[in-house]
Image (cartoon, rainbow, N blue to C red; front, top):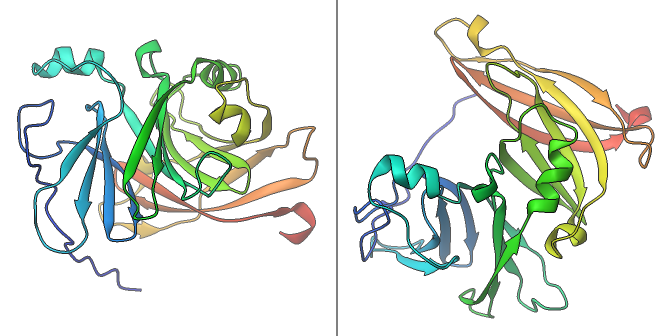
Length: 250
């Protein structure tokens, strides 16, 4: 199978970002809404909006108050470390949907997020900051080290991937109650799975591999398992969630 990459556009901005440059230095999440690409950077307090057509510079939309230092080390210490950007479906307070962004949770400063309400044209019209400290306390109770780096929505479930490290190699996949998360409450853990990969044993050429998945089902959802496929390359890995089903269907 051949993977063909095509450049869509450059992430240039109409004014300097927190880094002082007129581009996003770390694009950690992307959502397309109509003809607009919304992109978050982990060292920003804004979300950037770009047209999917043409190369006109993007604009910054504020998510949090205040500003970040231009010095890289000081900015790293103060940044919200936004790693997740998701499109929320239509709801009671979001008639045209919304964007949800969440920090990595690796420090207290990074345990926050924001909801950006969209209008019919897909433009952001209102932003509300979220205190997600209760969410991350819940995550911390079931992982060795908090560092959330991936997410997906599955109905009313928020699926989070807590990335492993050299010290703690297991990547943990968590299913949590979305509504409680959006309300800043303590969400229930609906399931927990552990995914362990070993990128250091791969040869220098990229290979397709299926990673080992060990299940630790929640009492709330007995018999439920997640099927994952891992695409591994040297010193890195990415995961694609392919299905959620009962164990009898796997």
